[in-house]
Length: 97
Image 1: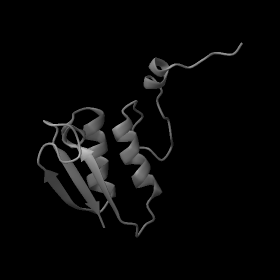
Image 2: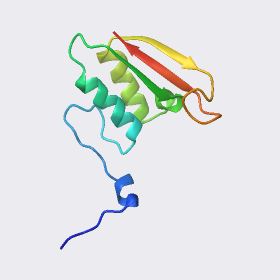
Image 3: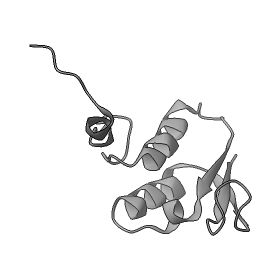
Image 4: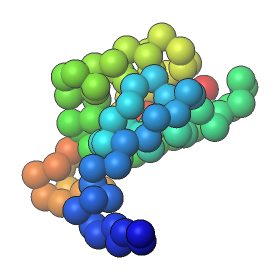
């Protein structure tokens, strides 16, 4: 039997990867974990994320804890609202060295 996957089903997908710290349906956390998993030992990265990603509880707390423990996080630059996202949404730029 062939089953069509619509957009609602796509929102429920979780990614269970061995190189991810947590399993979640949150695309922003998965994106951040994917970037970290792709870095070489001496790799560098800069990532723009909405403010709530860094300060969310639960899964966000686990990702933030692992980010601080396992990645050489150099700077978190907090940007004013409306720079990268809609008005009212603050953004952060994370720099890893």
